[in-house]
Image (tube, rainbow, N blue to C red; front, side):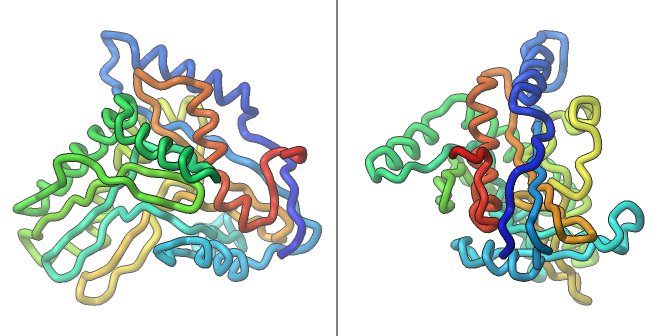
Length: 293
């Protein structure tokens, strides 16, 4: 891998704090229907020689406990994506279909891990008791249950989330399953029906999507869906997070990280969460968010 350094932050950390503050004013307003919105920021890294997409993906997969990774040529999307590549390793299953069986595994609620085992355990326990994170997670699960209910019967979800361990982060996750009413609904049909979930957009989806467009602008392929579907309709789609977009000349990559904002959110904590979520991509690129870190 080439040597990579951060060239730009979009928005700046102060800009992200302002964006979260703007969202909180809406979330805390009694007459506003929005209860959650996911706001993201990005880092632009420059490389001293071309970044090899497949080598970056293999690094990400090697550091992912589930071995998930993707490397997608964005050329079919046309300009300005010609010769660009989306590379990442997502921890979040949007939907999987096997015959009539459907499963989802949304993640919402995050805490940074610590090197010290006692501090790490304390961070995990604090996450499981966090009113803010549990509330944020419940919004996501309920939204998925409702969306799946339009296509499935016997929709089931655990009554409480479980802890999901990643190398740099703890997450709250809840398996959600169902049985298709009709095998005519493919994995791609399911992905289109479910996306965007409240885990990457917010609730209600229309209000949250409008807020994201106003605050962030175009996200490109970040927080989309990446996966496959076979001729029988089976397949698996992941949420395209923990990812980066490599430019056509491969001398630059833009990586993304976001977090769910609810009325109880603290702007500084939300900024720290995005920094923690940059970690998998930065580690694979051999870089840090700040040169002195």
